[in-house]
Image 1 (tube, rainbow, N blue to C red):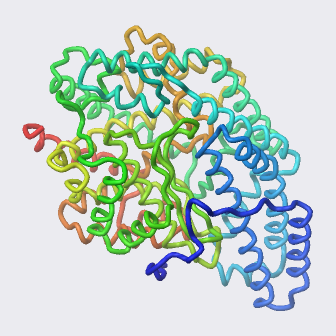
Image 2: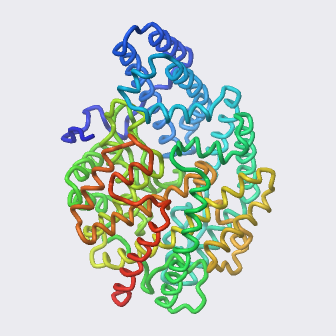
Image 3: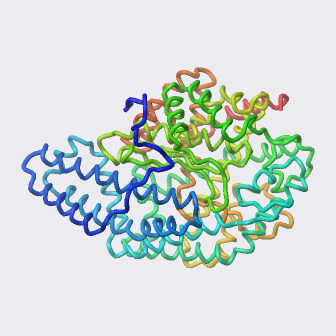
Length: 574
């Protein structure tokens, strides 16, 4: 579903966008009017008119929530932004209750069939799934969960690390962990993880509280464990835990040996006989590829990169730069990580990141631009629920763009582009086992909700032995005790999300394989997939792009073979 991309609305300026907080009593009145209007409607058109009013309201509320969360992440120490985020956390369950009551009314009414004829069965299937995840009796638990997630964000954003005469945050230490000097890498890693060790009890307490409140919610809703609830929260309509377990087994069988070979080859390249964990971040003896330009110059280079891939992607990116819809610089008090959010009331995306002058700057920018393009292409769909697909399908948009940008990486890396392409592919192979480990760990955690912190750390060590058996932490005691997972935001804030990246990567590598023989064909499939938004479940979407579902056994085997061939062909050049 394409739209006019010639210009963004004139009122759109990313630095000043804001939506006032809703008044709960007024919202209740609005929802009362919607329910009354639906019940009074005498024909399909009248019911659809009520649906459209409801859809506009949902977009407005989603925009308020997204903006409040973004502004908090941009400066977690600001009291007003903290208060606004706190209000979102407090009101979100109440808004969910109002919205769910409307969904139940529609689904249980004789007019449901007429609406489905207009908007499709997929949307009502999503509503049925979502309704099973909420009841008014868990409102307080949802608020508690959101506050714990915000507490974790603020804790990591407040990190201050003394290193090499500087005071750094967690994003700022990362370039040192990739230093060509082995001792510097080691000391940087020790400094980073000393912060986690110092706050270990707090991190354990936050996570323990999260596990217990999530398990309690699941039981109140009639589920045997939080795992069942989490899968429904993620709207996984077409697969469940058994399919994911089979997929993880495929990674263990088909990818882990290839990843171990990547680790060994990198160590040989570096002249290291026994690679340690602090060596895994370095690909080449002289240092990892770094962008040939930084900051604003790197952002400007993006115009050429994205336009060369597809003119519509380039046009959107240019508008986002000009309208300040990117916040890329790292600074004190800013939350860690990178993501793309969107403001449905305005129909525009926003990219949040923490540039640190490493290759990660390019990776994050290109990745999040994939999300931004898909979000924008679908912003004006008539149904809010179909703007974005489920998370694993959305990650296909972002990860695929990383590989479609391969021919343009000279614009970011200059003479280092070939080395970056190889490192990017190696990192993909290494990521698949890590992503599987994170997912397996979460399944273990929520299968044993009464376990204590020490047992959870042992669970992590267990999955490392399966998927990351080459890991050696030496005297980094906190890591050796199984603490690595605590730096992964998704484990705390978006449970069971992380496997989605690996599912999407399996699809993205298939598109990459197509691009090696017919680039324009791959781009055409990609754009077509992005423009489908969330109109179907994950496996239907990927098959519509001519891709094999990751749950089919041969999918990983095929992309692994392609990657192995390309890596072998470029080994000498590296």
